[in-house]
Image (tube, rainbow, N blue to C red; front, side, top):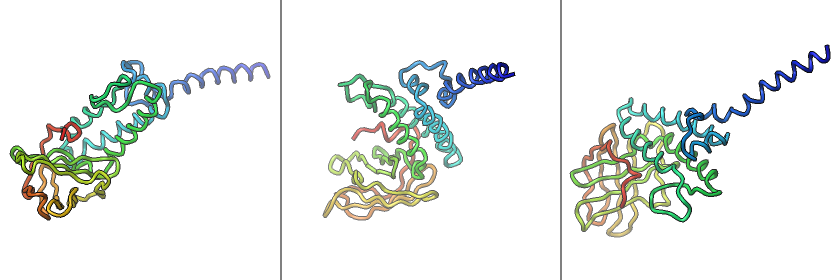
Amino acid sequence: MTRLVATLAALLLAAVIPSLSVSPAAAASFDCAKARTKVETLICKDPQLSRQDEDLAKAYGEALKLWDGKIAAYVRISQRGWMGARALETPGMSGGGILCEDDETALSCLRTIHADRIAVLRNPGFRLSGIYTRGQDFLSVKATPTGLELAYQLADANTSQGFTDDGAKVKVVPGQTIVAFPLAGTGPDACRLDASFSVDEVTVTQKGPCGGAKLGGWWKRDQTRDPEAELF
């Protein structure tokens, strides 16, 4: 009887151990048997990163439903750009927009950027982010893990650029559609933009001279462009 019990226990343990060993792969958002890149391999091997990948897939799915799915094209472009930046870059090479290097820091870096991306997609301000255009001028509203950043690029060379202070992310709460953006600058360059967002446009009220820039009025969302891809 004792031998039978021991045999059954051994068989049960043998069945459990393989299932534990593949749990990280089961948690990933893709089939680990088809992992092709080093990033995908690391995701499948590391339990924390695998869980983050699964959480990221859920956050992305939630983001596709924002504004009743009416900005899904923008969400897809934004995610595609981030996925490209998630590749690992050869150490010492820079300038390609890649977020992590292919060295001993790769795993910790991937964990960090996954956590940040999940926070961005779940940021209440993400649904307001995007590129908004007015002729050849454009506003860039970028979601970060902790708030929103705004920058503008105008065709007028005399008043071409402006942006929010890097150290002052603008906080947004769920359901908020009116946001005040204080831009960097003092005196004649002082500027605040009060922005009222809807699904496909933003109406801006300008407060202050803004260095001579004329930013008030209506701007249309361009779902074919990603704020992260715009270079100032």
